Length: 509
Image (cartoon, rainbow, N blue to C red):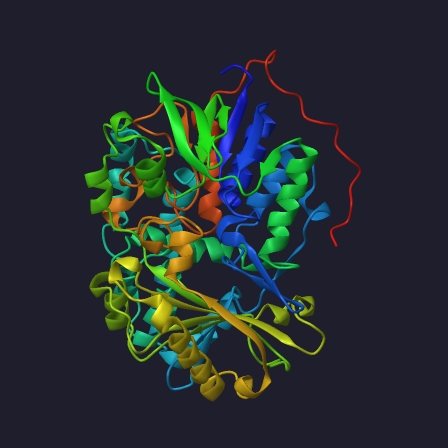
């Protein structure tokens, strides 16, 4: 490719990472963002002195951020700082019993022994199995494109040998007897939109990934990561245009040649990298006549991931004994997940993820106050739930539950509160059916069977982010940007756009 502008659609973490990598390769890059702020799902809400991360909050494999800054001669620590979270997660059961999921092996095994001594050896065997899956599924394959059937066939023997055709829950159950410990070791796929009873066992690699690099928190919240990446891109002369939705990818000779924005502007380009939901991009931005593979009827048959109900609230009090991340499990596990993923009904009960970032960063709330985020997995909008009518009562039920059992006195100290529903994901984030994680990561929608990073229909059209390989979660979307380097040829030395001079370091605030 000659040096021309590459358009990146969307400024989520995958889009921002792609822009940095493309700029490091020598391309000029322009990011077009439909919303009024960068970050995509990793946006931010600010209310009355409280800062609420809108979406992802769990940072792991932070070396991927270090790589991005190092590519252009910068040190990530000059832009944003990370600190460890301990425990990684606190898992609370309906009877009030809890399990602190930690990185320290001795502490972890001690807790497992208290639940069921026989599961200590079983956990060791499971962790060893998960490590083998990690060595194949992450180390060897995460940043490799899977747009050719031959690439998939090469790894099938390894996947079969490792039992990756089973579910994560099935794999864990092979080694662990205690049902509570099975839940502790299988909730992680929910963080990338997968049902533990149906997501393939290759996703057990998440267990090893978290053990290897830990769970961290960015000072200032995930929004501080977005701000750091945007600051870096500004230094690299990358323009991020907000309030600029793309409505069409123009195709000539089976190749993307331009995009058209909502206000009618036509922007020519050498290539398009989309951080948007591939289902949305194909059906809404690429004319049907240009799509021989990704046709409307095939896209309609794909299973979109679950959605989320997310409540944000601040309180005029603190609860120091709370963990940074708490997983509150309901009385039903498998049955609730069936309601969410398969039956697509809004259940009366729920399991919750409670995020209390002021444990690690008091500046996320006014002095003496606490900022919270509570997430409830819910079916996507194929459920037909009228969220305009039911949203407030659903949130009230969650707040009452937390006040009674987990955050006593919350109601009396509530200062600010609001929520988003699957409608937010569908309308604001332009995700088909309001999915929160792209396609559901089933066996039939993983690796080669997921949307490809390089379009089969349109030359010069590429995909990054949760909807494509390797999948959702911060490591997934950041690694999808690494895949681009294997698909987009670098410009010739004479055509490459040089990087600006490296500025003097500035300590992150």
